[in-house]
Structures are given as structure tokens and as C-alpha cells.
Length: 189
Image 1 (spheres, rainbow, N blue to C red):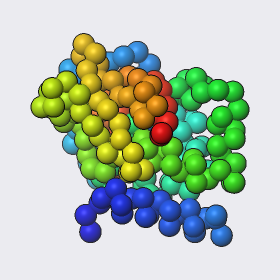
Image 2 (cartoon, rainbow, N blue to C red; image 1 turned 60 degrees about the vertical axis):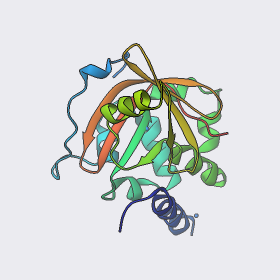
Image 3 (tube, rainbow, N blue to C red; image 1 turned 90 degrees about the vertical axis):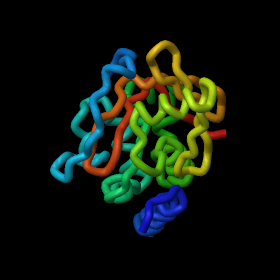
């Protein structure tokens, strides 16, 4: 079955229902990325995020939202992965509030706003940006939109609230897709 935003969202909510019972520090130039060729023996998106040492908050949020199985499934997915520092920029208490069981739906919406169906490399993003005159719209699994553009050779993603976020490390290959590390958290409208 092809993976579409609708099937990922359905899987995410199925995982939520079952448990409810219930997307590198300095800006990296785009040219510095490595070619993304996921290997079956490579860790998946969740395992990769768990191993970085800078995605503890993201991993905890994915676990609280019941999305581990979804993001560990074959995919492919592209995830814009905010670092712990990015989450720390949110108003105090935001993360603690979001990971509460009663806020699971909101948390799932925010996390799936960081995911895109398919394997989208930085080269793909740059090509889309250039093709569309300097700005490209990206559809997320949550059904929202992100806008990608370039600032020099850094990819900047702007969320629905108009907040720009830099991709600080592009093209982290996983067995089920690609991770682009970001210095901010995307917030849907």
C-alpha cells in the first residue's frame, strides 16, 4: 500500500487509539549533506533520534503521542526533527503540558506537522524551491503546510505561524526515510 499523508495520519491515530485504551548544532550548508540511501540495516527514524543525544525531548514527545510504531514502520517518511534546544525555546511549561495524556491529540497534530510522506532529501527541497521561484510549499502528514526557501545555502522552513526555522543538519539517512535536524519547532495554525 502506498504511504500517503492520509495513511500515515490514520496509522498515527490508530496507534493513539490503541494506547489510549488512549522533523548538529550550527547551520549546515546544503552542499555539505551526504547522499541519502537508506539501508535496511540502518536504524529507523526513532532509533536514529534516540541515538543523537540532542533529540531527547522529541523522542519523549513521540512516545507520549503513541507515534513510535508509526515512525518505526517502513515508511518512507521525512521528519524535520527539532533539537532539545529548539524545544527549550518554546514558552516555559509548553512541553510538559503537551505530553500530558489529555493533550495527546494536540501533541500528535504538532508532531505530524513535522513529518512529510516520502523520502525528501535536501536536494529535492532545493530543486522544489528553485522550480517555484524561491519558495516551495510542503504538505505535512498533519494536513498542514510548510514553506521552504533558501537563505544562502541553508534551507529555511517557515511554519503556519510565520516562524522561520533553519535546517541545521540535512539528509540524515535512516532505514525508513530521512531526518532533517532543525533549530526550531513548527507550530500549526
